Image (tube, rainbow, N blue to C red; front, side, top):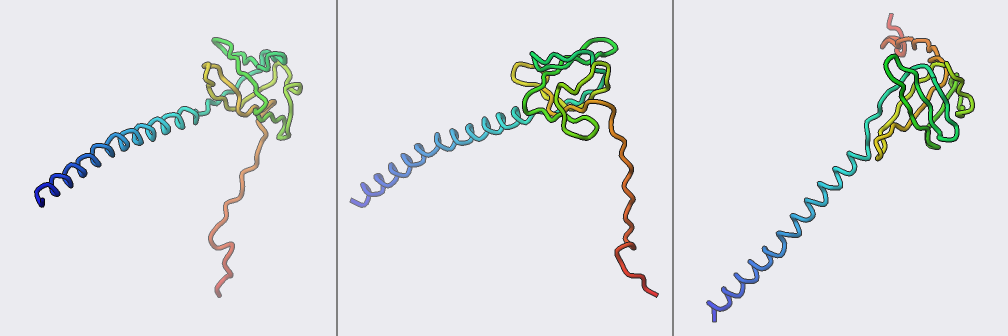
Length: 140
């Protein structure tokens, strides 16, 4: 009777181990695939600058004139457009103006603007550096 009980316990233990192994492998695969999907969604931004060659309001795109080739960038409703530091629209873009911003590649391989600056880069004054002594009372 004791021998039969030990065989039964051994079979139960092996069955439990065999059933849990594929579940662990499947969950590891699911984690790996979800990590890859997250990395693909988190595309790296591609900076762009240049002279505005064309604006196609119907296709919601802009074309930059380059030295060697023209570059077309799609503008989406999520694109943040600014001109002179203030919110703007595609209607505010004038051909020949300097533009810049950041774009990402979409699933079709086309560039979509995340941000678009129309006009020259606004000049910013450098912020004065704070010294450690500014916030402390003087000791005399």
